[in-house]
Image (cartoon, rainbow, N blue to C red; front, side):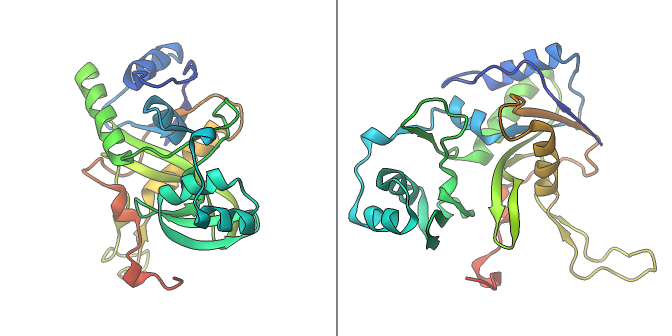
Length: 248
C-alpha cells in the first residue's frame, strides 16, 4: 500500500470546490487517480468548505454550560457549543469534557476545535453529515474523471486507555468501515471466532502519519493498494451499540 500526501491544497474557504482542489493538487503532485484508490481528507477542510464556523461572541452560555465550564476550566460559551453538538456528557473533569456526539461518536469536546482555524474567538464544528459529505465528493470526482474512488474523512481523537491522539474515521463513502473475518482460517486451520477489523480507522491512522498534525499543510492523502475492495459503507458500522458497551 502506498500513501501520498498531496501538495498544493490551499487554505480552504467556505464554498470551495474540494473536488476541483483535489484534481489540481494531483496535477501539482504529478499523480493521477486510478479506480480503487482512496482519498483521505482531514475533517477540517470538509468543515471549512461547509462553513461550520461558530463565533464565541454569538453564543450565550446556559446555566448547565456555566456549571460544566467551572468544573472543566473552559470558556462557558465553548461548553455551550459542545453541548449543542452532543447527546450527553460521558465524563467531565478539569480540562477534559468527553461527550457522546449527536452522530454517536464518543470524543472530547464534540470535535469542536480552534486549532488551524485562524481567527481568534472562532471555532470549527464537525460536518453535519460526514458520510453525506464523503458521498457527495465521491460522486463529484466520478462525474469529473469517470473513476470510482473511495473517500474517507479522518479526525484526531484521544482514546480512553491510551495516551496521545490517533487518526480516526468519521465519514465514509465506498471505504469499508469494519471487515468481518469470522469464519476464516488462521495459519493452522483454526476458524476465527471474533476477528472484526476496524479497517477504516486503521487507514485513517496511517493517513494521519502522512498528513501531520501541526502546520504541515497536507490535508489530503492519496492511498493506493488499500487491501480491501470498495463497497457501500457507513460510519455507523464502526460505532459499538450501547447494548455491547461494557464501560458506560
